[in-house]
Amino acid sequence: MKRIVNLIFMVTLLFLPAGYLYAQDKVIAVVNNEIITQKDLTDFLHFIRLQYSRQFQGKALEEKVNSMKRDLVQRLIEDRLILQQAKLDKATVDSSRIKAKIDEIRKRYSSEADFERDLAKQGLVRADLESKISEQMLMYNFVERKVRSKVMIRPDEITTFYAQNKGQFLKPEERILTLFISQDESIAKTLSYQLRLGVKIEDLATKYTFTIDKLSALLGQELRPEIEDTVFKLGIGEISNPVKIDAQYFIFKLDDIVKSQQLSLVQAQDKIQAYLFEKKMQEELAKWLDELKKQSYIKILEN
Image 1 (tube, rainbow, N blue to C red):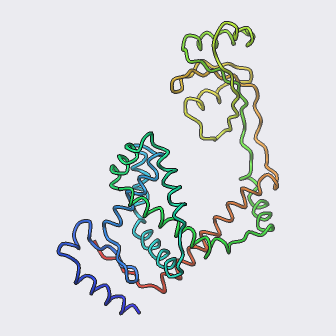
Image 2 (image 1 turned 60 degrees about the vertical axis):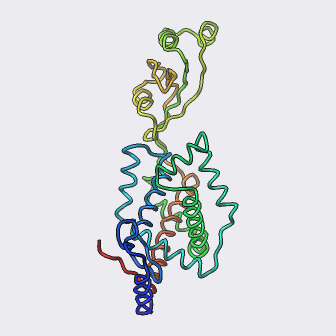
Image 3 (image 1 turned 45 degrees about the horizontal axis):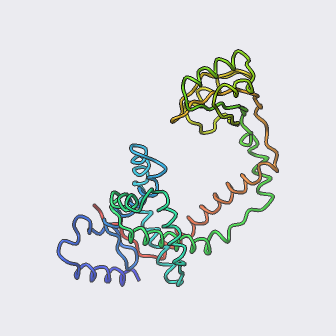
């Protein structure tokens, strides 16, 4: 089988146009009777960058993308193997789901022009995006049927994990806060001062324009640094100085501190179920892919 695939690969190379093996068209891997080129790798990087471009920006985005580069060829090989199996199985994806996903991404942008501009910045066109999303959905559906649907977590597995890892299931210390929000810095400073003097909120509301909200902040929760630096230094009943966040000024009043508490098995079971399921899913997927690799012809070409 490997000899036949190797022959197909060599014949394919003979009929490639001049210069194909250079730059973007350079072949970097062979997976059964298909090749992976440098362009495939570059396009995949662009697609990853686009996916994370709304969650991360600038240096953080590049660090996220770079952290994934090391294993990217292996990831492309595994994706190609899954796609090959899905096509052999005649798996399909509903085109309306692809369109819905494109529309969901498009809604992140203020205009069609911004959307197209960002695609171009990542070296993509809409057809590239549609193709990548179609492949992702096809792979997900196939893995869902072949692997994920067969993964089961028994109740005793959850109970055992909880008994052995109770220390992981503590509800962090919680701070209950009242927020006073103003658009005006001068008013915010006055409010903070007056609240410290003990002036009643209803009396302040007759003189100044501000809004009131509630906030529950957990120790270790991902909060904006300016909020975390303020609220975890307050004592109960204490009022903070105004803190500018975006275009508004926030004053924090600490109402109560709820101490860290041990979660019961009932409270923790959903989290444990999700963790054990994902762990077992990844283990089963790795086994399935390893078996698939053993049955396939895979060659990574040296740079």
